[in-house]
Structures are given as C-alpha cells and as structure tokens.
Image (tube, rainbow over all chains, first blue to last red; front, top):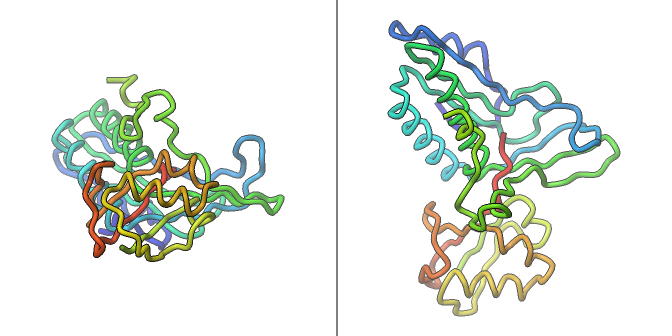
Length: 156
Length: 77
C-alpha cells in the first residue's frame, strides 16, 4: 500500500482490511478537511509531499508503533493534491488485543506524522486568499527544529 | 549542485534550480539562499536539509553533484 497517494482515501476498504483474529480493538482516525481555520472559511486544501522521504518516515513510525504497543495492524495513508471539505486527508488505523494500546498507538502515529513527515498543506480560503500554514512550530518552545512536543506524551 | 524546494519556499525560489557557487556545507548553502532571497531568511532558519533522502546537519559536507532538498516545517494531517 502507498503511504502517500493522490487518490481518495478508501476508509471503508482500509477498515475492512484491518481486522485481525488476535485483535479485540480496531481504532480508525481520519484527519478530515474542515471548512474553517483561525476564523476564516476554508474552501479546500492542497497537500504536497516529498513522497519518498515521507513514505520512508511513515513506514518507520508505523514500525516503531508496532513494536512499542505490540500491534496486530498499523496502517497509515496521507493524501496529496486537492482535498475538499469533509474529505479525509490522512487515515491511521491500529488494531491490537485491547483498546488502550490501539488508541495510544493511533495518537502516537498521527502525532509523529504531523510533526515529522515532509508533508505540507496549503489552505485556500473562500475569500480567494491562500496560505501555507498550520505548520509545526515546536522549535519555538524546544529551540530545536528536530525536537517536537507531541500530544501523545500527555497520555503515556 | 541542484536544489529542490517545497511548500512555502516555492514563494521565494523556483521549485528546482541549480547553484554553481562552490558551497562547502549545508550552513553555507543556507546562507547563500538567504543572500539570494533575503525575504526567505525566517523560513530558511527553520528548514531542514536533505541529501539522498536523508536529513543532514548544518556541517554536512556538500559536493557540486549533490541534489539538495530543502524541507520546511511539516504541516501534514
């Protein structure tokens, strides 16, 4: 499966493929495009990626999560190109014996993809303006462009 | 060396271009890019650089045949 794709994310099909006989919990996260950001109405988003680097990075993040939470299934896919309101820009599916691991691993994977993978969004607003935005600003707090503050750390 | 930029950096540079100046390190390349377009300075300061699909540090030694990728902070998801 491609980690980066310009095609629509097939959430239902991916979920159907993510059941496992040893897994009692399956968690699916879909990062959907919403119609507003920082008080402005959003028309659509366009995503760009460094495909080979982002793919390698997502694979590595999934492998880390598999080992850390002993997952049965770990899947992630991110869109590129134009993504419309309510469409899915990124999907993460985790399956494990119990729900705690599936939830925790899922947050870990999406957090790391958002902070680390070379993928960028350009927001196109309904007023005709556009902006490359929503980027990781962790360096302002950590003082290091390679050090991030992850949401998943709050729940570990 | 060949340079490729992404996302917001495309507002300051061509998507791909070549630099003929002999630049020895990533640090020198960053400074050179800032010289070429001073308005890009704030963004370049928080960019990572990659060669052969691997991130490289400021002191990484560059050669004229390198393809260097300039990676702004991520904003996926």
